[in-house]
Length: 133
Image 1 (cartoon, helix red, strand yellow):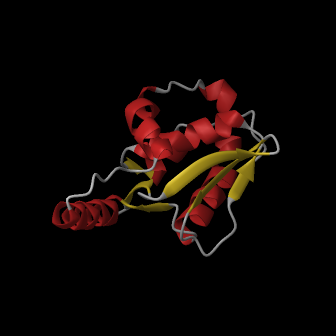
Image 2 (image 1 turned 90 degrees about the horizontal axis):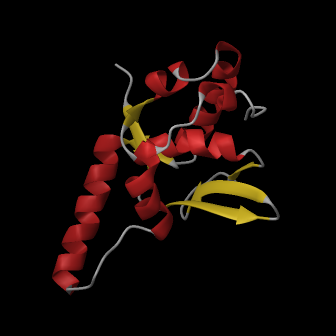
C-alpha cells in the first residue's frame, strides 16, 4: 500500500533570486528549486497527509512522470515523509517542549501551509504550466 506523505516538520519553502526552494534543515540533498509557483502550490497539498498516487492523479497525464520524480526526490531528501513518522516527530518535540516548558511551534512556513495549504484550489490546467523536476 502506498504510504501517506506529509511535509516534514522542519520543511522550509523560501525564495532566493526569484526562485522558490523547498528543503529541510537536515536534508542530505540540495534544495529543490523552481521558478514555477504553481508547482510549489501543487506541493503544498502535502501540508496535510496525502497519498502520492492521489496527488499525481490530480496532474495531467503528461506531467505525472515528472511529478513522480519530484516526489521521489523529496522523499529521498527527507522533505516528504510518511505521515506516521511526522506525527512521532511532532510528539517527540512536544514532549521535549513540555519538559522544558518552552513554547514550541512548527516553522512559520509549515504553520502557514497547514492553515492554508488544503484550501488551495489550483486548476488542473495550471498544473501543466510547470516543466517538471
